[in-house]
Image 1: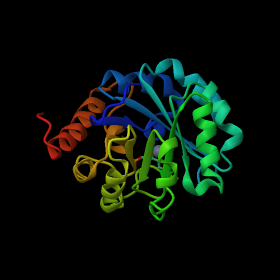
Image 2 (image 1 turned 90 degrees about the vertical axis):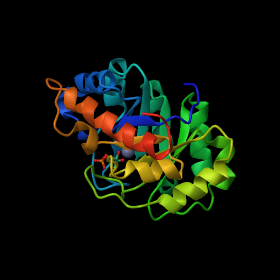
Image 3 (image 1 turned 135 degrees about the vertical axis):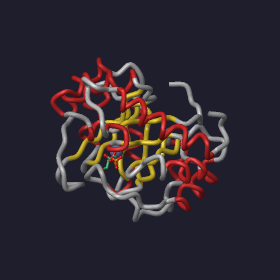
Image 4 (image 1 turned 90 degrees about the horizontal axis):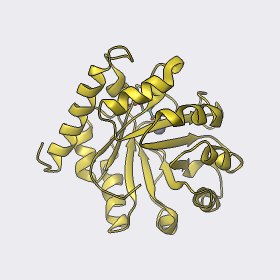
Length: 232
Ligand code: DX5
Ligand code: ZN
């Protein structure tokens, strides 16, 4: 994974056909996705359950690029090794998931994966400064985690302040929740480079009719790149 601040579109397979994950991952990558975002939920940290490391390992061979695993689970530490062994390139844990986020990030790095920190909408940037040396990515949640298809919560100010705090460090800013061609521009302008989108990518398509995935990905990318002055 070479670091770049170019806009990356990361479809969330939470909005894919759960009976067809392999084909869905191949389809979104063929249609222009940069990363594949994998939402792991435990029914405890968030009020919904998805899947665990075995499913991640099963879909890994169907992803050519970056497998971006977002852990919405508590505790996190006992499962890090399992997700790393499943082939996660990035493992993101929530600041709110336990009292020892520093240890969690150390463990993610030690597992060989890139380390991500997710912040719920109600969580501020206090404490992030102390973690900068351990971070490869900060995920600013623009919904309360647990479900796809929710309304965007504007976190412009948080993303701008985070972007200033990061400076020249090679740390991605990811935004997750309610991202569409309408909401992507303001987040890109604020400094986000990884745009997670579930419903807005998968709507209108299927593994048999994947062209809408491409249209949707291009629409989000064009809106974001247009906002930061990339020629599109
Ligand atoms: C929310 C998840 C998101 C979500 C994105 O808990 O972390 O990745 O599925 O889905 P949309 O784009 O539909 O809000
Ligand atoms: Zn997510």
